[in-house]
Image (tube, rainbow over all chains, first blue to last red; front, top):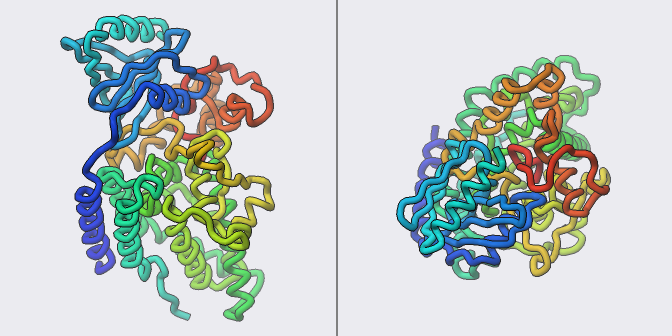
Length: 130
Length: 316
C-alpha cells in the first residue's frame, strides 16, 4: 500500500514538473520536415508536396496523388494515409479530416487560400483509395 | 531465504532519477532528450496500472513457479555460483521472451505498450504492460524453477527489470567500450526503441548485450548526425488514453480474427509476426527493411509500395 502511495505521489510530482519545465511546445513544422516524417512513417511513400498548418499538423502528397495526414500528438506527429473511410469537410480555410480510426481522432488544419485545392486533392485521394 | 523485491526498493530511485533527467534535459536541450507532460503522464499511469495488474494476476505466475519447482531436476541451492548462473539464465530467458514478444503477435499485443511512446526518456521505461501475465509471458522463465530456488529467480528477474530502467535515456551517449561490448546500454537500447528500418527487431537484450551479438540480432547505434533515430511504433497511436494504449493491439487482433477468411488465417493473425496479413496488405519488419534496401530484394509481399504498414509497429 505504501508503494502505491509513493507511486501516485511520484506520478503527480513528475507530471507537474514536466508541465512546468517543458511548456514551450515545438517549433512550427516546415515543409521539409513534414515530407521526411511522412516518408519515414509510411514505408514506400515518397512525399513531394506539403501543406503545413499553423497548429502543427500537415498534409503531404506524393506523385501518385496519395495524401499523408500528419496529426499533432503532443510534441510529435502521428501519421496515417488518407484512405477508405476517411472524410474531409471544409470550414472556411480550415480543413477537417476524419479517419475511420476513432481513437486516432481528427486532423484540423488551417490551409489559408490553398484550402480549396487541398480539399479537392483529399477527396480524390480518399475516393481513389476506396 | 527471504529476499527483498528489488523493484519496490527502486521506486524512490526511479522518481529521483526522472527529476534529475528532466532538469538535465532542460539544461542541455533537445540533444539530451525531451519530455512532454501528457506522454509522461501516460507512461507513468501505465507503470502504475502494471503494478496493480501484477497484484491482481501475478498469482498465476507464482502458482506456476511453485508447481514447477516441485519437479526440480537439480538443486543449485544458494551457492555464489548458483546466483551467477541464475542471473545468466534469467537474462537469457529474458532475451528469449523479448525476441518472441516482437515476433509473435500474441506476445507483442502485451509488449507493444512499452514501445508506444514516441519519446525516449526514463519515464518510457515505466510504460509497462497491463496484460503481461494473462498473455502468459512468464512461461519463458518457468524452466529456471526446475533448477534454481524460486526466491532467487524472482530476485534476479527484479534486478534485471531495475537494471533496464536507466538505459531508457538520450542523456547518456556512450559508455566505455568494454561496457558497451558486454552490457546493454542506453545506446544499444535506443536502437531497440527506434523505428528506423535498420533498427527493427534488433537489440533484444535485458542486461547483457552478448545474447544479441551471439544470436545475430545486434545493431550498433547509427551516427545521429547521419541517421537520427525516431522512436515509437511503425503506426503510432496518436492517443494518450491509457486504456487504449493498454488494449489497442488486442482490439486489433480481435478485429482481424473476426474478419479473417479462414481458420488458418485466424491462427496466423495470433501466432505470426506483427504486420502479417492474409492478403499481404500490411508490412512486417522484414518487408520494411527490404523496402529500405537493408535486406533481400523485395519479395512478393502482395502489397503496393506505400500501402499501410502493419496495424502496429512490428518491432523496435
